[in-house]
Image (cartoon, rainbow, N blue to C red; front, side, top):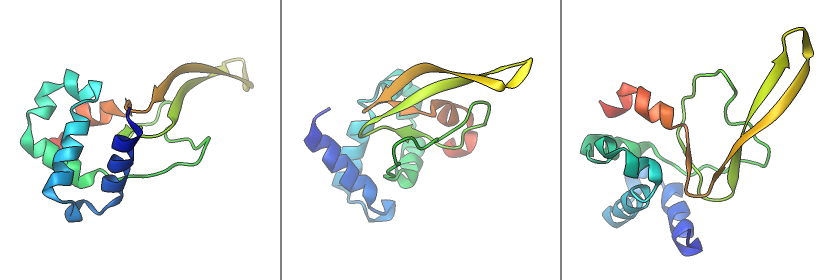
Length: 129
């Protein structure tokens, strides 16, 4: 994605949601609707109440390299849009006979413009209320 667009998104998301201008809100909506997840889930993008609540809660947050955002088996409580960098999704396998024997398997990279935690949006009805 264009660096200028990403820079603008970062600036807007760094602001308190209540202080964003209507132009900034429209810019965020336009950005969100370009993300494949939202293109594939028109029921969410057509729900004006949902979009307003999402925009009022979405904020920029920077994570240090190698920061664990969620762990296998835990119920997620966040939705992440990757603006810069990428996330690595991996699975840890534990040998049933030897709990100290663990292997890590790379599953996928979540790149700039992609999302992580879509299950949270899809399954938590309180966001849509």
